[in-house]
Image (cartoon, one colour):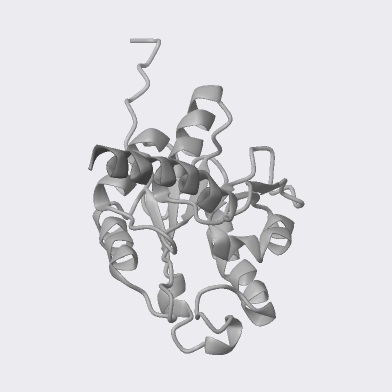
Length: 211
């Protein structure tokens, strides 16, 4: 019995890297359009974004995407860039096609961004072409923090656009690539520091030096 368990553990250890390798490596692209005298917004995605890296970079996003990426992996990028001082004012998360996204995970990422940045949540389609519980959690979080979260409801926007997608209803065909880049462009008006989807967060008043 003990030897059987040991063999099972070894199989899992060998199989896990192989499965992860099948997802491909990280794909990045620098923004091809300068939006102003500030850092271009960052979008973090999974396999869905892989098909649209160049068009999304062309409109002004810095792109970081990888197949099979979970929210926790995307959040690790946010934390690393925060430590390095390279986190822009606006960060878009286009995740959830492969893994579950919890409300706690979204809240943690919002906390990491801090009150002076904008989090863009792009709702994922599930296999088959419909939105699921991950998309609904993102909608709920956007209602909870409307000043700091911008919701781009990709799942609803593409509900009747099956021709944009591969047969799985998830990954992009040529019309979907163009449509996604255009849809993400709606967020760019909030890319500059100080721009928020609602009233900006309250800040401490600056004392009057004459008093």
